[in-house]
Amino acid sequence: MPDFVTAADSDAELARERLTNTLVRTGAEDRAAFRDLYDCTSAKLYGICLRICEDRQAAEDVLHEVYLTIWKRAGAYEPGRASPITWMATIARNRAIDWRRSQQRRPSALLDDLPPIPDDAPLASDMMLAEEISHRLHLCLDELDRNQKDAIRTAFFDGVTYAELAERRAVPIGTMKSWVRRGLRRLKECLDRDG
Image (cartoon, rainbow, N blue to C red):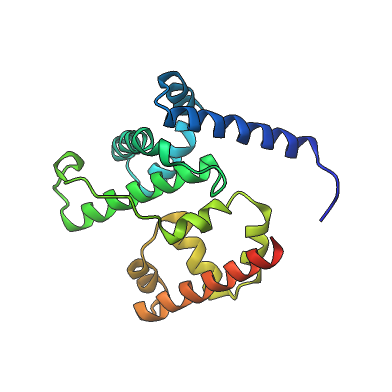
């Protein structure tokens, strides 16, 4: 790994520090910080919601829920565990997937009609997404076999479920879950080794 830091690396680190500070202030119920947080991140989070929901109005509704969740949970954010944008992207991804699944079960149901879904437990995907912004993750992904790499990228970056993945690849769902589990285990080993 090179011993020098580029200007882009320095700018990215400063931006991350500013965003971390803004999220921490939001956790202390600082409304001005929350407005800044929204201004800095809403385009990216909307893009995640839109990619998964595939509907502009639904993505806007989900984004509203995402920021309500961020406001409520910002006090629990731990800067050492994940980057701020990764932490928020995980919330957006999970909310959008929840919306999409609810539409598959109850196509006529509106999001407002659904009961709130508890989201207190940390997800295994949090750690994987926390490393998404680092170059190491992409290098480690490239070390996986094609089935594992494709399954993980599609599941975690595009919000596709195991059942959808299995159907697309014409394999049993157990096989798909096994590919993802083994791939995630190898990915973790690679990240731990290189970290």
